[in-house]
Length: 150
Image (cartoon, helix red, strand yellow):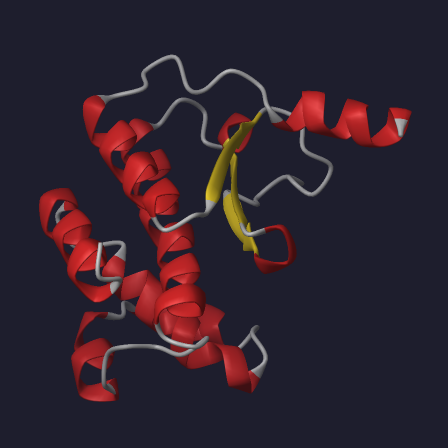
């Protein structure tokens, strides 16, 4: 019980100092589909290089804000990316929504290389999240609302 409390206290660190209306809008949209967003400065799984992740078992997006070095654009991109994984799970039965021809042209070389680190069954969903994070925020929010019937 104490361990859980400490873990929760660490995970619920204050959000980024430069918390913008744009970040707030994305966070609120993710929370409207019933997924929690935690801004962390010390979550145990926020090892160096991990910017964030979606944990389906607790339906939570964890943003490793300490690894972003206060880069608001990177925080926003990560929040949209991980939030999209929640959308895939909750609004499309754990599947990507876009066709391959809608994903491939927007993947950069680095993303194509990194996708091979994922299990083959996860590669398409991960590729889609990497593309969807690039969508302008107002369109991303509108897309989630439409796609998830909000």
